[in-house]
Image (cartoon, rainbow, N blue to C red; front, side, top):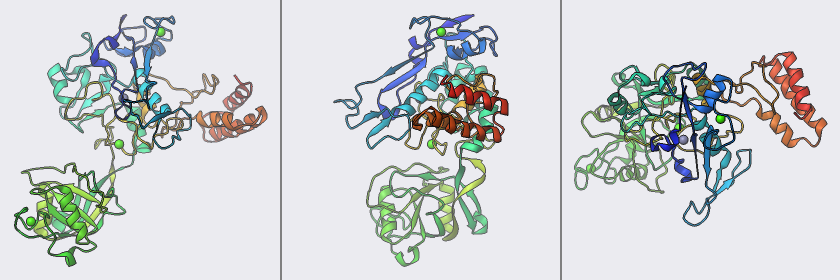
Length: 467
Ligand SMILES: [Ca+2]
Ligand SMILES: [Ca+2]
Ligand SMILES: [Ca+2]
Ligand SMILES: [Zn+2]
C-alpha cells in the first residue's frame, strides 16, 4: 500500500472557481494506491474513496496531516475591499441567494466533489503522472481522437489530448446512462431548403444580442447586402447600412465575417429590420466561432457558421431553417452519449479535464464555474453518477438511517433522494408533523420502487426517532 500527499504538488491543487476568486478550494489531501480491495492496481485513489472501498479508515486519526481525507480552504474575506467587494456568501441551504450573493452550498458541493474523487492527479501541462502512477479518474478518461484511455497514454499523448476541445470524454457506464435524464438536446442550425443545404450544422454564439433559441431563430434566410466600399469592400460584409432593408425585414440576414466588428454587422442587420443574423466565417476551412464584442442596443440574436456554410448560404441567396434540438445528440456529450470533459485549447492547471465541459446544458455542478441555475441541495446532476463509476457506492441515507436499503442516494436525474426529508425537518412545527411529512415521502419512494415496504417502515421509525 502506498500513500502520498498530492496537495504538496501544485499540479493537483484544485483551482478556485472562476467566479468566486479564490473563495474556496478543496481537494484530496492524501491519495492511496494498492490498498486492500483496490479495483485497479497501480492507480491513485482519493483517500476518502480508498477508505470507502477498503471498508476502513486507512489512515485514521483527527490529525490534519496524517488523518485527513479532504482539506478545504474557505475565504472569509469575500465582500471585503479587494476581494469581490460587491459580493457576499449566501449561507442558506435552499439555493436561493439574493442579488450579489454567491451560493456557498453550491460552491461547497463543487469543491467537496473534487476531494471525493472528481479530479485527476496528472499534470496535463507536462503529461507527467503523479509520482509515477496514473489514477482512477484517468482510467475513465477517453481521448476520442486516438481511442486511448488516459491511464494507458504516454506523457506526450496526454499533453496533446488535454488540449483537444470536445474530444475528451468520461468513459463510465453510470454517467453515460444518466446523461439523457440530465442533459438537454444539442441545439443545431437545421436547414430544410434549398435541398442541397438541407441538414444540421453546428453554430457559434456571441457576447451581444439576445440568446439564440429555437423559439427566436427560425424562418427565411436571405442575404444582407451593403455597399462595396470602405470600410467593407464586399457587398456581403454588413459593415455599412444595408441596401436591401425591404428584403431582410423580419427575416434572418446572412453576412460574412471580416472588415468590421461583429457588433457592427449585427447592428446594421437590426437597423434594416432583420429578426436574426448569421455571420459566416471568412477563413479558409473555418468553423463556427465565438463572437466577442458589446453593444447593449443590439437586441436580435446572432450566430456564427462555418466558412463553407456561410458561403453556400450567400451563394444560394435564399434558404429556410432555424435552430432545433437534435433528435440524437445531447448538449455536452459525444455522438455515443459519453459526457464531455472540460478541455480548453489552452491548458488551465487543475481545471482542464477535472471538470465536465461547459458545453453541457443545462449547466452541471462540476463545470469549471458555478452558475445561477444550480441547486445542489436538491440535485447533483451527473456528479454522483461519476462517483459510482470510480468506485463509490452511494446509498439513500436520512440522518444515518438507510444503510443496507440498496437505494442509491440520487435518482438517475441527479435528484438527491434525501432532500425532501430534510425539507420536512426544516418546515415541520413539531415531531408529529415531521413524522407525517417524511412518511408521506417514504410512501412515494416505496410506490416508485426505490425502497421496499420494509425499508419504508424502518426509515419512517428511524427518522421519527430523530436518529
Ligand atoms: Ca483518514
Ligand atoms: Ca460592404
Ligand atoms: Ca454549460
Ligand atoms: Zn472545480
